[in-house]
Amino acid sequence: MRLLIADDDPSVADFLRLALGRAGHAVDVVSDGTDALWMATEVSYDAILLDVNLPPPDGFEVCRGLRAGQVWSPVLFLTGRAEVADRVAGLDAGGDDYLTKPVSVAELEARLRAITRRGPSPRPVVVVVGDVEVDPGNRTVRRQGVEIALTAKEFLLLETLVRNEGRVVSRSRLHEELWDFAFDARSNVIEVLVRRLRGKVDIPFGRSSIETVRGTGYRFSPDS
View 1: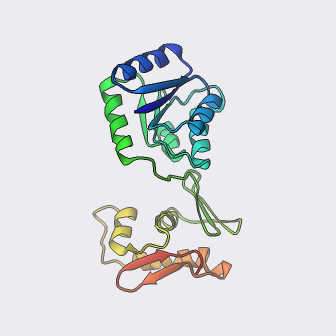
View 2: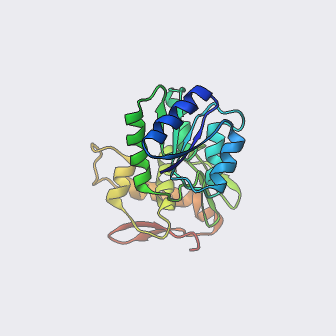
């Protein structure tokens, strides 16, 4: 694999470069966010290892910048910051995995194998479909530039539909995405939620993007 390591600690960077090099990988190393952005844009890497505490821009900003620039190489955050909030921030920034230091080389290689098996695939930080913009990190939704206030469940429903633009999402899948196994699937709560969502996202804008596919589920078609 061709790997990029971005870490401002020379001892950590050298350790990773040597260990991964001995494992047969080609490894490039940078020590700040600016060089990380440049290298990851210029070279097609199989995976990128990002420290969070890079000289500006930090690792989160680097990852967001890569995804905004449509660079989809898998990103593994490798950092000493172990708080849950940091893990969430890394994944919301477009990262594929998050591993805290110190780390064993065996686990690091296993994580790299896991994220590279999926291959590069679009994972934008902000999902834009038609005139609708969904930002999972900040939990915000805008249509035609107007911010729309949604409840947590309404947001999850819209995000699921938008990420599957043009495809039918079944009722059973929506139940799985929004509730746990104890939820009564016979309830009409999905229909109620869809009706409320249409009242906020579609009707005020003269649109009918959230379509009902009778007997199956729902589909988001932004041009409807």
